[in-house]
Image (tube, rainbow, N blue to C red; front, side, top):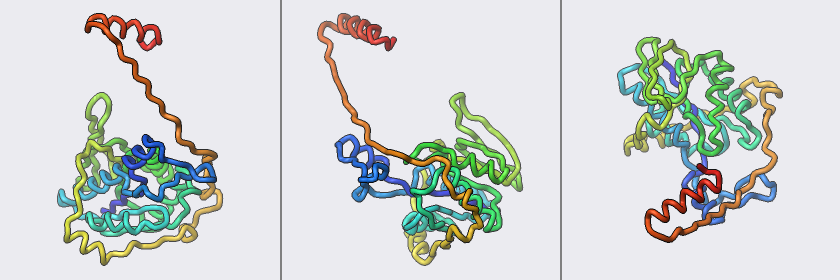
Length: 265
């Protein structure tokens, strides 16, 4: 079985939030790009869960090859981390991330999957922490004509049968289907593992396969984004706090009156 895990490098969400709260998050002169020289880039948290899901499938005894693929320049650190975790193959697709939308991203990933012999299982994080859209996995399933099981908290593979436990607002839902398929992984899967010292040493010898966009046979239309970012800005956040005096009963009554006055209850 060949498992392809789609991974993405993102700005550290905690660092971004801290910069925003401190008023230090700024936009470049183009009005679109964050000034992020001091903000570290890390592997998207949900994609770490996808890698963990692939590793758990292998731990169950299934004979499989795990391939981690990412789009964008300078993906060495991210893919080295995947190799240290246990990925058998790592692939870096060189592209300008600023020129991609979800549709073009999915087109590129699908073109690579098709050109590399296909996949029996495609795992993705439920969404990326930088845009929070979660659209790419659904588009991959649509383009490749594969079934999609979103929000998985557990996966089992037996022969060609896939059993996915989905985390839903109404509780767990168990679905079954045949491979190949696309599955998105949620954080309910559990904490992802850390790479071992042995894995880190082995990852130093592994170099990602470099793939150029021109080698994937995509048409100009497939590489033209349908959604273009026009402007990005940091909203002004203001907090106001009002203290209510009186006994607990009086304060509670005054609070209820104010909430009704503001049409909040």
